Image (cartoon, rainbow, N blue to C red; front, side, top):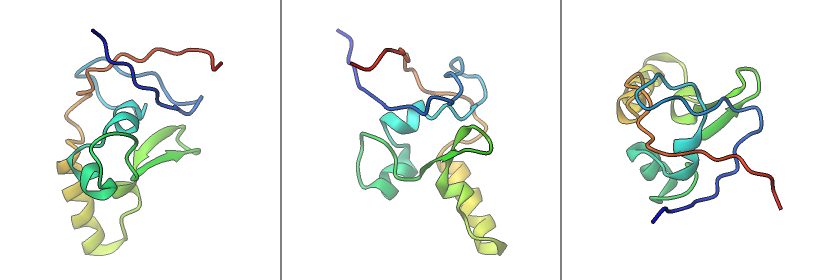
Amino acid sequence: MRHTTLAHIHPNAPPQPALGAPCNGCGLCCLLEPCPLGMVLSRKRTGACVALRWSEAQQRYLCGAISDAPTGRLGQLRQWLARRWIAAGVGCDAALVAQLGAEE
């Protein structure tokens, strides 16, 4: 039996990449369930991560734990830790199937 969860994705978000392909900022995984870092920041295990940010300039979702990090050495450390926790650069690990549909 399939489990269905509704996520409101920005209309300009890129389509979900193939499993293992580089992240393109589609945001689907972070809209449905936070990563380990997102669970700490959001204080929840399901639903949209509070750190998820839409970038109008880049037309993609970004992790606010990385993009909103302060400048300087502390900010660099925070970005490095966040990249490790969210497995940045590892590739898409969201075994999800996105289905677009009209709102009723």
